[in-house]
Length: 284
Image (cartoon, rainbow, N blue to C red; front, side):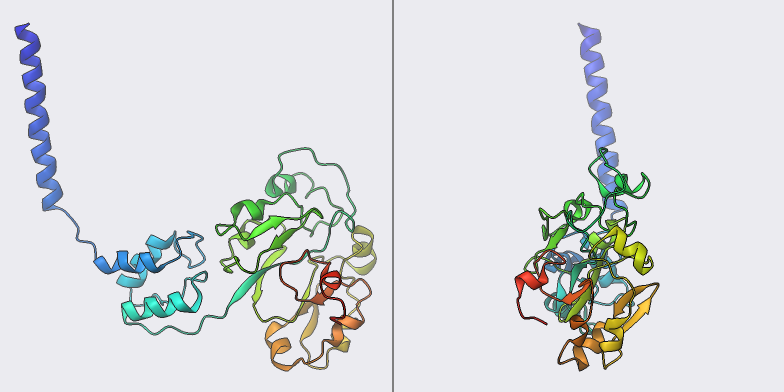
């Protein structure tokens, strides 16, 4: 009994000694945190999307407060209001933030896209892409397993019955998280005021692209020739729209009238790519 009490006393004494040592060390070597860091962090949207280039909102808050070279407008989801608030708190100048939104550059729905094989593996785009580049004949198209939807920190994406993701314009912040996780790179950010977009990412030549998907851009360049402002150019058999020129100069989208596969369409937010005509009859 005496031995048990002795052991208990020794352990208690050691605990108290180490406790005092840790308390002293904590006070002696404590690093003061600038309270402004927490204030800035509270203003940020807490999406932890990494669009600012830092590992989460806390890391960006610390960097923008302590580093004079870090601008206050890097929080893409927060847009201009957050940029102005951070600039005011840190005493920095905030350049204008251009609003942007995610777009799906593929209209390869279940109806349009041809399958090369049946995939029965893990229902994830990255996993499917490891097996012969996915189940679609077009190796540039959306695989339709919703990896982008699962990774959206703002719940701004859903998978449609057509097998393509749909962007919710009310929730999308343009953070770019979906863009980074798509193994096919069919998701990209576009300015919020864009007028037309190309619902395709295929770089195959016309005949090959058309065999793989009925909605593919076939590289015919008719849209480019129709545009009087030079806002469209062909890159690797694919039409690419310059949104800045299009927004500034275009009053009538003549490019929409000639596309034989309707790969280039008006920008109508919140609809499945390729269904713009159904959503807005007479947009051409």
